[in-house]
Length: 391
Image 1 (cartoon, rainbow, N blue to C red):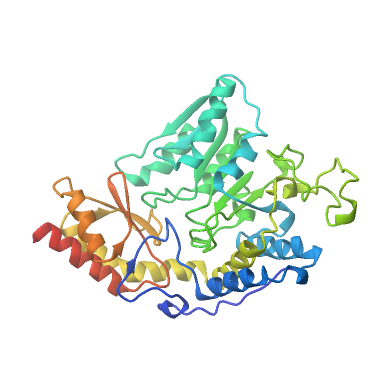
Image 2 (tube, rainbow, N blue to C red; image 1 turned 45 degrees about the vertical axis):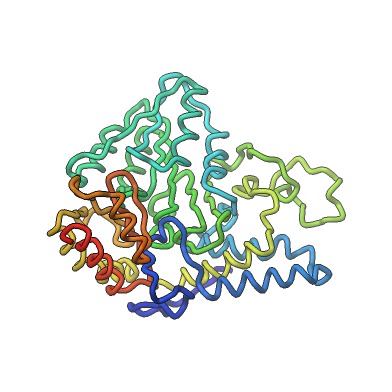
């Protein structure tokens, strides 16, 4: 049964749902999310239950995981939770994808410039294996042209497009619907890294229909480090997983019959589940986290992030720290270009000394915000940067 949540979170700061110190300006959810109080409580309760193992049932290995998968399926607008599995990392999920792709010499894998490593190394390895080619679409001077260049790159030689919903360093949004249409016309696969978007941007499997969606769980999904999710479409229904574990085999719920070895996997994406997917502590924390995220309307969330940041971004642009047009980038994650005249080491040191936490990615200062942030955090950011620039 589909679990339904009403949108109950108003468009204002939700600092009270977190244990973040008032003197901390945390603008780095894109690296690691803090914990909702409810997630922290779920983890502590699960740890305490470890002290009473006699209370566990065999079903505890399966039923809580199914409920978690249903939550993630709901989040991505997928009706069939059997297309969703929990995994330990994006690289694990991508490895299952690559393990079930056969290329021809000269085939092309399309990626974008400075893609996240977990969505690069696996394709580099696959290309070498088949003597195929990695084709990188560089970011143009005008970010608004990036999607057009990606679409123009996809051709009859394209076997796979591996891309994020947005660029992890600067927040530029990629037009997945148009990319899917183009890949369909050339019989190419579409694999999406949703680590910086799922839970923060509106997304629908039904609209995009990717072949696979892999997503880290410790960023915008507020789970513990070491938790991730994967959606695998029909292309992978009969594929070979990268590991062989007992829990993803048909009938594995019957623990007394495990040595009646079963050659058949559970249906659809279940075969790609990681061993020990029933992790008691992680599953409880992940479930609590997704319940919180499902309460947030993603359109309203984007509007909230925009409202607390836009005025300060305009002020920063006046002192040379520019960001892309909000029409082409996400509002929860964006890059701010650092002027060449600025001492970056001094900037980093000064931000740290004022308890401001964000990331530096290439030429960008990456800022990412959430409902625990307010306009006051951005005003503090501007004040500190302005002091570095103007003394």
